[in-house]
Image 1 (cartoon, helix red, strand yellow):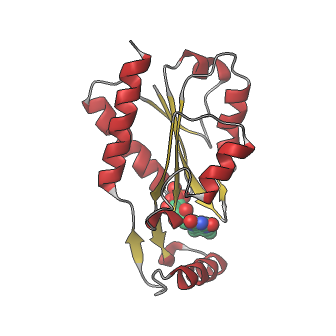
Image 2: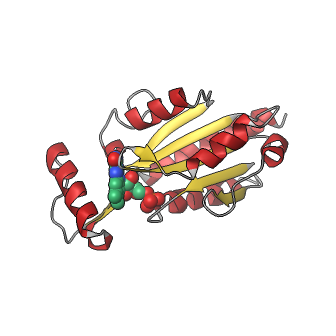
Length: 180
Ligand SMILES: Cc1cc2nc3c(=O)[nH]c(=O)nc-3n(C[C@H](O)[C@H](O)[C@H](O)COP(=O)(O)O)c2cc1C
């Protein structure tokens, strides 16, 4: 299967790597692809039994390189089943971690006419010290509004790794179905 990711600060890549490792341990061959540097071609997509994408959010949108996957899928005659995961801080809140409850994911699916067989939102990482001053200001404001940490010296990984494991296990189940 193909596992694509779009990352800026590394958390979506970390999640994708975790998923790939868990799938490999179950004997599933995974080709991991960074959408910024190594996006799959339509032909590669067509040859894959399943495509999963782990895509980070910045300022309300999936990273621009996510469009490369959408374009390749659109150009694919027989697109394989698609699995999506958005990585963002909003998903740290219960109810905002589903395809229905997460507005970024819901809009992304609708705007691009996607029909994922599985879609979820996974909480990412907050790392104030590494942000540029404007980003730090903007994220502190969002955290203040949503009741999150505002101390500019903190780094907090909100990712629920048990949820990531469950996500990987769901992908494994889908792989077993598609390769039968
Ligand atoms: C500049 C900036 C803007 C962000 N905008 C949002 C946002 O609009 N909504 C949200 O839920 N999270 C937002 N985040 C949080 C990121 O989605 C989170 O840090 C995620 O882990 C980033 O993934 P990456 O490390 O793979 O780039 C933002 C983070 C940064 C640094």
